[in-house]
Image 1 (cartoon, one colour):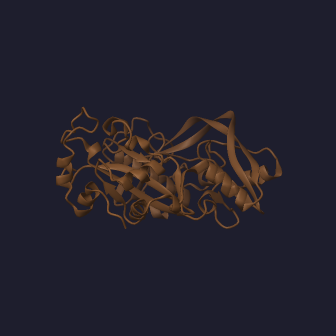
Image 2 (tube, rainbow, N blue to C red; image 1 turned 180 degrees about the vertical axis):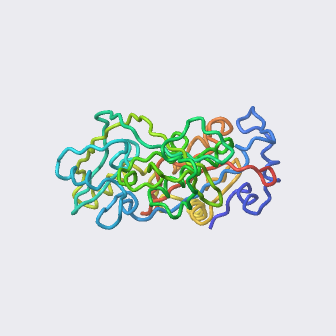
Image 3 (cartoon, rainbow, N blue to C red; image 1 turned 60 degrees about the horizontal axis):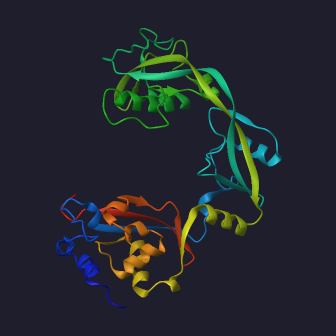
Length: 340
């Protein structure tokens, strides 16, 4: 293998301090790098292999795995029939991240549109410590004198409700937040009708206290008004063969396409190291590293003023296809050793 320039050898050998000293001059002829400027220290490239096909990760086959979506919506889409569902999208799909599924050799792109708004009343479970004052009041479930109950003995829907309401109770008054998308209105909102019917906590004679993870909480239930979107399931057939579906996914998700033959031996070694543990260099980069960055179309790390033009943290918005395989890649500036 041909030799790399001294900058790369110094980094690989661990002589980072010497490399930083050599870079103390200007990068663009006029600006001197300060000791706290992380952008000129170490640029790390890491590649995570996705595989030889995109379909395995991006296409759902409901016959082989549980998609945890509304299966009736998929049946309606295939039959060309209207189907609507309240509050929750029928498929985990957005315009930027569409859901694809296959059925009997036909591939579908699935989505939804909002077609109405529904007003409804839903129970909300909140948990409070014994010393907390619940200014929201209580509902039938907070019956005076009722005994506490172990959450593990409750119906499944209640166990899930207590787990999520516990997150809100634990975070109340503390920094750190709560799980986004789970906690709502400071507790748990019952939306599954079967869970409401089976609930012990929502019953008129339900327990006033519940124990969970070595803590005992006072139960507070309110029935509150919600305004929820109504989604109509949408979908269309987009491919009749695996090859066409693969081409669609490449067009959506893959950016740089690099062949091994198009790279120098040294650039291939850089990518090989990036796959197995990551690769890093300080600026100015070796010819091999610069070649790799150009092949990834990441020219802000090379052209102009790297201190101003290059992003501090960057994950490639598109995947890399290299030598017939797909990779997610990340580029991150690292501080020098001892500066973190």
